[in-house]
Image: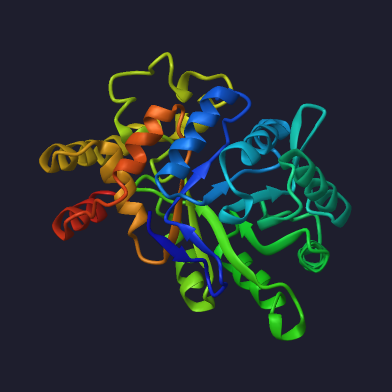
Length: 315
C-alpha cells in the first residue's frame, strides 16, 4: 500500500487508514482481529482510534491485538482526546487535567509506551486555546507522544493553533488535522484544505464513504444489519439519507457500473486522491468489507469521471 508523508514530519502513513470507532461495541474482538490482519497484510500501517470510542473499549480491543498481530515499531498509532462521558452525556473538555488523564488512560488501554500521533478531538470554546496547546508540548516532551495533531477544527481554528505551536519557539508543531470529507460533505474545501496547503499540514479524511451512504446500501431502505439501524449510530447516518444527497449516490452508482467497480471503490478513490489528502480513514463492519476496501487501493479514477463527480457533488 502506498505511503505518504504526513505534513512536514518524517512520519509516513498508508494512504488508507484503519478506523476503529465501532470496535468493542458493534465490532467484537474476533471481527476486529480479522480487520487488523487484513489491513496489515495489505501493507497498511496507520491505525486511528480515540479515547471516547466505545468509552475506551476500542482502545482496549486494539491494545489486545497489537502485540499479537503487529510489530509496534512498524505501525503508526493515532488516538484522540478531549471528549468524555459524564452522567451519560458526551462533554468536550480540553482542559490540561482532562487531556492528560485521557492520554494516560489511552496509553494504558493500548498497552503502549507512546503514541505516534495524538490529536485534540474537537475545539473546546470553554477552555483557553493556550492551555490546550500547552498539553501538546507536555505530551511530546514527556516522551508519551511522538507527534501531535487536531481534529474537526475549522480553518481559522487550525490556522490559530498552528501559529501558536510554531516550532521556532520550542513548541510541538501540529502536523495534521482530521476532518470529515467525502462526496457528500466537501465543506473542508472552503478553508481547511487551503490552510493545510499553506501551512504544510497533513490532512486525514474521516468517513470518506459518506458514513456508508455512498456504498449504495441505503438506496432502498434501511438494512437491518447496517449502522443506520444500530441504536448507537442511527443519528450519525440519518443526515445523509436526505433526498438532496441521493443524486450524488446515484452518480456514484452510474460511475461504478460504467467502470466495472463497486460504488465503494469509486467513492473512496475520489477522496483518497483528492488534492492535499494524506490518508483516508475507513471503518468497516467486517473483515470481508475491509478486504473489498483495500482491494481498490490501486484503482485511479479517470479524469472525466472525477470531474463529473466534482460537479454533481457540489450541493
